[in-house]
Image (cartoon, rainbow, N blue to C red; front, side):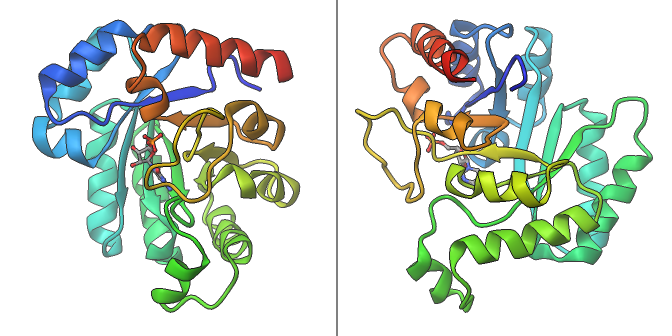
Length: 233
Ligand code: C5P
């Protein structure tokens, strides 16, 4: 287990509320994630502001477009100096190779490039509704194989699939949203797991949003989770 496995999702509607939340957290305890809501509202300036207060940023924009467009978006993300960026694996191997090649040009600071397999909000029925007849675990393994061949650094999957990913593709980092404390509601997430079990199941990075950001004292909640996962890793 790496020393800083928690990534807090700053799913806030604007710059000020995201910065206010980030300032309650500690860069020594976690990294932060900027997703579609915050980025669309606040723009690249929010990434710069988070860097300025010491955080490493996972830019979670899940690029899914034609190869040329995704390559350009990845280059733009690298210019922002983010720690991690992602694409959708279902964008296909040509798109993922284009993203990999684009980031190869961004040295010396190359962000980690990972790919979303099956969203943690999806269950078998949702997957079937978009025409995928495989079981979720089969589809995650299938897409992870392509991610591996394209030379990416890791996958986003649920913690339920992390151990299989680690068994077959040990070099890939596993980034797992859908983390819930035992007392929490699942909200819109379908494939959820507690932080301790996720780490025991092979998650390298835990993406945690509402379980931390919705707590009365987010930094205390973060410390409690960090201690509980340290105890099992
Ligand atoms: O609040 P919660 O812990 O459910 O937040 C999870 C975060 O992880 C959200 O920002 C969501 O966009 C993101 N995410 C996800 N499932 C994926 C990829 C990212 O839930 N497959």
